[in-house]
Length: 532
Ligand code: FAD
Ligand code: SIN
Image 1 (spheres, rainbow, N blue to C red):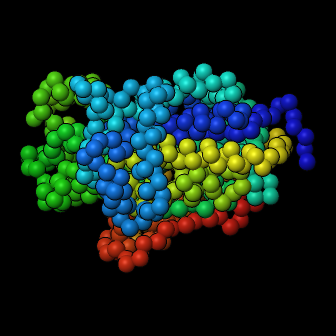
Image 2 (image 1 turned 60 degrees about the vertical axis):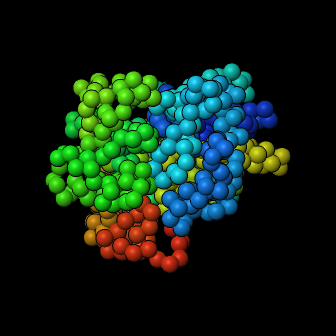
Image 3 (image 1 turned 30 degrees about the vertical axis):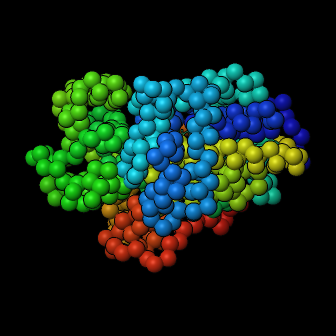
């Protein structure tokens, strides 16, 4: 065994990712472990930071655990695991209380009670929020708490490249320092993937640039099982701006009475579901998709202007300001919206405590697939899942550390004969192609023909990217591109395996739902080769 080097960054626990999952987990283990937390950009940049609507939990006497469980199971369309749903739902109030004690300022009513929002698929008001800037408030509070905790060391601009394995145990990871371009060994007894989602694999997405599926791709290369990747959730209402980076228009607007209309002013949701605008989001996304295909229009309208102007500005200050910056006054005018890729219901298969198939490797948050969301996530259940599962994972981590796992050093990163790239355009070109092909062929409505086309294209792209990966010195763009291609392939393969329509996976060739609900599992066979 190689002895530890002074160049190694050594910790009891290495956490990869600084969203709600990574930060809340780190806080929970900080009193019994020394923690290194790495994140690939500046520390607040995460899906968490952009969350608008809030966290679902039973927080009022008119609600019940049974109802939240039922809504979650109904939305999951037969694929959610009841035991996981029960545990997450029952833990939710305590975890929200914990966030409040840490300093998160949730919006309150005039009498001081939590102001609860409602979204599609929820039969009760149960979404705790900080106006429409909930994620920003949570992220800032957790980062502040982490900064005051000496046993957590946070490193920004470190992009994890690969997990390092020894005898089916994870012993740390290689990460590229994107400022110095050096590759660092992070050696740890336990490694935790909290790397978030995959939205950037699609052309139109609500997700920020960090969401390239790195954790899922790394875990897959290391030999972990990846579950239910066909279930990409599309959010129905993303601000339509043909030329500029855009912005999510929260479902909470529909919770407060906003309606969807086509360009001619016709309200169409009643044609699709009795809950109309508050139907589960797969139904709303497909309805908009169908309306757009039928009319040839580029967008539909979401209209909240029927509500009082002061209410709109105080309840949705973030959305009001952002839309105004695009020249849309939402108190007077409807908002042009389209669906966009939003959330990955699949991921690294884990228990509720984040355990994967690989020893000493945990996965939490959007990277993990615990069985809570099944075939479709109920709105505002993901911040919740990240919180509850981090809590359970912290307990599991304590038990694992009691078994005294050993620190194993590993050889420094070798660049071999790789040279600096002379054609970075290959990376941008391939990235664009993946995003376009996923949008066109693996989007809201799928078919055998489209999936087969996508599979052929992605195989060619994979070949080219792998060649490029070995020939050129590694960069953050190249790391992400390789991961995006790998996750795109996982989504396509999972979608091909599912011979039915269920939840958010809709196939023109298999419009029916099968009698038995089954998870889709993918696992790499040639793990050794894949790791090098
Ligand atoms: P993230 O918050 O995405 O954090 C991932 C972290 O990992 C980031 O710090 C990233 O930089 C880092 N990272 C990634 N790859 C690497 C790597 N290779 N090396 C090092 N670091 C890496 N859910 C709700 O429940 N309610 C909502 O209201 C809600 N609104 C949303 C609104 C928007 C616009 C979006 C995009 C999502 C929303 N969601 C909402 C979903 C929810 O925000 C996410 O599922 C959740 O925040 C995921 O948390 P996470 O900690 O798992 O990942
Ligand atoms: C939203 O605010 O509409 C997003 C909520 C979610 O994704 O849970």
